[in-house]
Image (cartoon, rainbow over all chains, first blue to last red; front, side, top):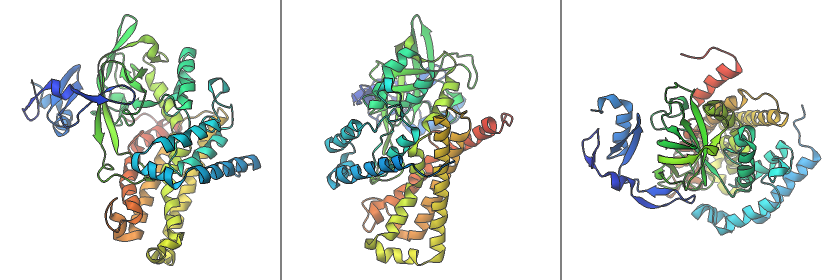
Length: 65
Length: 400
């Protein structure tokens, strides 16, 4: 389990990344209701919601411990 | 400079208009409304392709006709009015043709202009918005391959595309627009994940004919995506120059003009339609309203002329620097002005969205207002475009 650095909730990385289907071009597709993630400074961070991610992006230093 | 079409071009225009009148039937339009591209729409696209209209101006060796860019524009313009995109090549193809090696041209161009393959753009990232120079997606050389990690935002069409045209940083120590490269990557490459992002046009669904009515865009994730070095377009770390050229080339065509001015045509046709006589009476007999519509329509012709100038430059292999950017400032801002004008003229009923009782034209004008604001942001915001005009067009110093 990852911890959303903004709201502190647990986020299951496997669920966020779980494939729910495929695009027409053959890429894996995921469920947008299951949180999201962010590649920042060479590392993936997991978030409970897009709102949390936007807050993180506005000031990453405030949330990275 | 001759602005009128030649007799041959007028004949081509008439041929396309007759084709549309015959082939784009109410049943085809109903399918467009319900599911977008179904079997009936695909059948029309097959006939368009059979007529050679997808690739008039592309080189013969890639399936085109070595024809005139203006002929291509005439075809694009007519089909765009009924919701068909027949430009051929789409995003990416002009840049591959201009900056790719022969192997890449042979591999991609014919399939792109035939519509068999298509690209989505992997440029924007969540933290940077339209500021492409701040991108963090990384591509690290590993033997004969690159390994890519990162995330792209607003990858419209990623759920349909066969390939992605990706900007990634190949020199991690570089700043801003240095150290960026472009990769051409199949979407079925392991490690690519697409996450839907539903737009403001999704609930309720924007009606057919809405400008920027796309109900879905995407985020696209790259996690240890391994691609061979021949996916690199042009030279390593030269992606910024390639993308600037490519974006300008992508902006050349009927679609940019029509996205912004189709609503001018819509409102004129709506006012003239006898079926709308009651609602339109206060507009067509009102001098102030007539003036505002005439003003918008006149500005729309400026959009058209700017588009034609850009195409003329490309056609004559002239130096293409700021013109596409200038067009990208004028046309979206004109679009915002027009949608606001129409909403004001039509009054409260024009605020109702698709599905609402008494909505005018299935909420078309209300959805257009939302789409018009979007057009000033995507594909390079009008602020960035102004900066490009100042820098590349006027030679002013770079802003700090």
